[in-house]
Structures are given as C-alpha cells and as structure tokens.
Image (cartoon, rainbow, N blue to C red):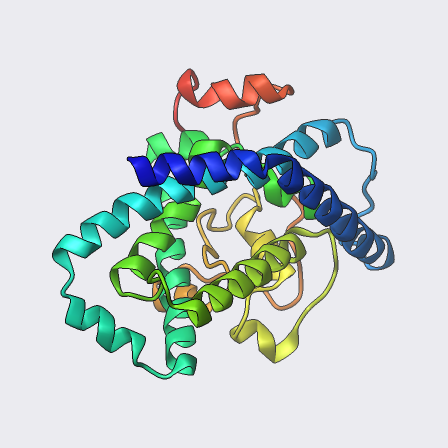
Length: 279
C-alpha cells in the first residue's frame, strides 16, 4: 500500500506538467487531424459541434484518470506475480531477444484488449459504461477520448495484466519500458487516426493494421449489418481469427451511434451507467 501511495503522490505532484502536456498533445492532434478531416472527410461535419465541450472534458479525464488506475493495477498484479510466477520464468523472459519481446508485447497486449473490448459489448453491465463511447452520431478524431472512467479502467488494465504475468513489463527492464512507452504513444495516435472523419483506405495494409474504415464500421448503427464487429485496436487479424471482422471494400457506414440516447451533459453521461437499463 505504501508503494502505491508513493506512486499516487508522485503522479499528483506532476499533475500540472501532465495537464500542460495534454494541452500540447491536444494542439498537435487538432492540427494534424483537423487538417486531414478538412482535406478528405468521410462526411461534411461542423468542427464547432454542440458537444465539443463535453468531448474536451473527456479528453482531459482520459489523460489523467488512467495513470492513477494503472499505477494501482501495476502494484497489485506485480505483488501477485512475485508470489506465484517463478523467478526463473521471469529471468528467462528477460533473456529473450528484444525483437521477440516486442512482438509478444504487441500481440499479447492487443489480444487482451480485443477480449476486453468484446466483453464491453457482450456483458450488459460493461456495456452501460462502454455505450458512452458509441453514443456519437458523427465520428471525428476527438471522439476517441469519449469514454467513461470505468470503461477506461477495463481497456487499460486488462491488457496490462498478461504483460505483467508473462514478464514483458518487469521492473528494471529499461529496454522494455522504453518499448512500452513508444507502443503506448503509437497506439494513442493510431486511436485518434482510426476515429477521425477521414476517407483514407490503406489497401493491402488493412489486412495487417486497423484503419479508419475498419473502426468506423465498429461504430456503425446500420440495419442489417452485424453491430458487434472490429474489436481490435491494432491487429485486425484478431477479428478474422475470432469471426468478428467486417470491412466492405466499396463503402463506409452512413449511420453511427448507439440505439439509446444519452444525456447531453458530462455529469449526466457519467452518471447514466448507474441508472440506465442495459441494451
């Protein structure tokens, strides 16, 4: 408990710097994706939309809250791992070639995310929280951060657990900590990209990596088309293997959003999972 409190105190002490960093990220993402969305939009949409303020609030929430949750999860899982996973196994993992450890981190992390994401659709009590992310009827890059803190906890902690258990995020492995930081940065930028209102197809690469078209179909609300599809964050092969892949070659969704509307305010949306019936 003392270790966790120390980590939380350190995070709290750096909160002003974290907020400034988030402001910088926001400016960079707005410049990059704002330009792309003007040049090659899927649909003509207003930039200054009515719920922009709510999504900006979600942006800062999602940039601050997960750090405290992940710190708690890391301490808890590391404590369990230290008592149950043999030290020889951890040492053997540490001796694997860096390229293999990087590949394992990406595959295991994305596979765990896939199942956490799929569970957020399949389990009614998780859908109560995740439906907030699916509520927008228009997609753009900032919609990426519209997520309830509980939904964020599931999405961040579940992939972290197997990485700790399999020794891919061991304390002291500086090369893997650097790789993990780079991987987190890459997946964060990519998540903004696949939510963006951009008409960009990646050709054969769409069999290897997720794309805006791939993820837009995840957010669709069209009749007669499977609703629960395209759960992977980075590797679409997971959806192919588990039968949830859906990516028409010649069109994009025309209708987005969830069936049940949400309150327009941030407070109303954050409280809605505790009083709204599941789908």
